[in-house]
Amino acid sequence: MRKRKRIVNIGGVKIGGDNPVAIQSMCNTDTRDIITTVNQIHALQDAGCEIIRVAVPDMEAARAVGEIKKQINIPLVADIHFDYRLAIECMKNGVDKVRINPGNIGSSERVRQVVDMAKECSVPIRIGVNGGSLEKDLLQKYGGVTADALAESAMRHVEILDELNFSDIVVSIKISDVPKMISAYKIFDAVSDIPLHIGVTESGTLKAGTLKSAVGIGALLSMGIGDTMRVSLTADPIEEIYSAYDIQNVLGLRKTGAEIISCPTCGRTQIDLIPIANEVEKRTRNIKKPIKIAVMGCAVNGPGEAREADIGIAGGKGEGLIFKKGEIVKKVPENEIVDELMNEINRMIGE
Image (cartoon, rainbow, N blue to C red; front, top):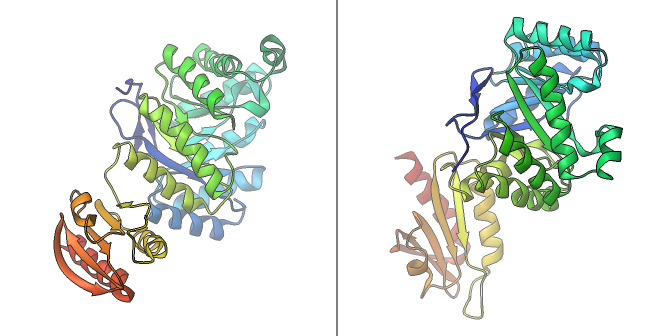
């Protein structure tokens, strides 16, 4: 069961409590290029992104945040390192959350100025702990980057904000080592009611990164840990959104979009199923309504084995059967299977 955390409101998207695990991504555009950044955010929102983050490397980017915010419809998060003035400027310009480490922005007075502005603007702060930027004394204490070191670093940053009576906090503890990441989140989750943003940082390319993220994020979600998430990929950010929904759908946390089940093929398969399955997956990627689609290689057992699917196909020799809830509705030539299947799906989701 998911642990109930304090609720944090990020530009109208609430996380914590019983709220859904919100799906995030981050633009890979130059934030100072307002038009390109806004266009990417719109594309990500169309794919299902619920919270978007942008990098803020300098004051020009901080000022651009205000214009970007005017042109989008999802919460905007500013990602800031070291310079407290950028955080303040972003909040003045309407950002919905800032990601910053209080311990890395200098004096206590600078931290206080950031917190005062966050209070004034009702902007949450995400404390983002990363394995690559741990404090030197923690590295010495634990002999390197360990789960305990990561969790203690997060707690330190939280204490800084606690002392300033600021509780509108989200914490992330990211590292590319999946077992360490899982352990660090478990340690922190056991002692805090702060909502957690989960993910595997620098996870890799589309294939490798999706696999690592599915294992790491999926493990945490299955333990009830996580209130918002990002799948970090060296790929088009839209792929991050698709992967995030796939992970949540597999765990039953969301029921949205197309879920495809397909057989691994065997000696009974008399149809070229692999390209058919890939094509079905590609053409159903943007479906928003929940629907389970089966792609089976055997016309004898296919409909029966996949009777829980809303619709599916089962191959024969040069032909295929289209079935709904295990009941055959038509037989079509092999070269028409995907088109006929999509026709039936479009009719179903349009009803």
